[in-house]
Amino acid sequence: MIIDSHQHFWKYDPVRDAWIDDTMQVIQGDFFPEHLEPVLKANGVDGCVAVQADQSPAETAFLLSLADKYDFIKGVVGWVDLRADDIEAQLLAYAGTSRLKGFRHIVQGERDERFLLGEAFCRGIGALAKHGFTYDLLVFPKQLDATVTFVKQFPEQRLVVDHLAKPYFKTGDIDEWAAQMRSIAQSPNVYCKLSGLVTEADWQHWEPAHFIPYLDVALEAFGANRLMFGSDWPVCLLAAEYQEVKHLVTDYISRLSAAEQQQIMGGNAIAFYQL
Image (tube, rainbow, N blue to C red):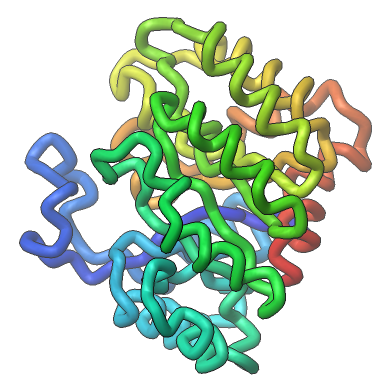
């Protein structure tokens, strides 16, 4: 199976979704499963993982309601307040919700570059594994130093770095990012998504060659058994069509064995999220 490990749905709200500013008019609208399903079929993708875009329990409920109606949504990465005093009770309330696979916090939006290491947040992360939940790491390169420390604290927790941690494609800066990603990858419980590439580059003038040095680092560090294809639809539409985003990955990994390609294009997502 081919699985898109990272995409979003939303009913556009200009207040709640203020991050979608006027430079992003192409995604200032509603994006629902009925919009994505024909795109997945046209691109030979069998299913997807829907990831939170808003930090609220309502977002988790919204995504789960969609997953109940559409079988191609194989899993949901929701949001829960990991710093809450009653985090254990909140996680227990989700017991038996089979399509809920894990959680994500928009750490890239936190002013504190060491947010991940906060005591309350780490207490919440520490509660996830025993309930079988994963955690998606959404960080900027400036937060990777803290991320290196963070992943070492949770060797039993399934973790995945979203969007290659958003490297600086526009400037070509790679050395510090590469060193930190290699350090993170030393923890065998950490995976990485080949997603969100085109929107971190020049939306109008990106070329596949711009990403190759970064993809080389990811492949070397994580190996084919810990990388996952993700489209980041509909955000990717700011810079590319779905087919272009998929081909970025499939073209790059075409030199790998058929088994390794299958892992990256679906097998690893199925294993990580237990789809």
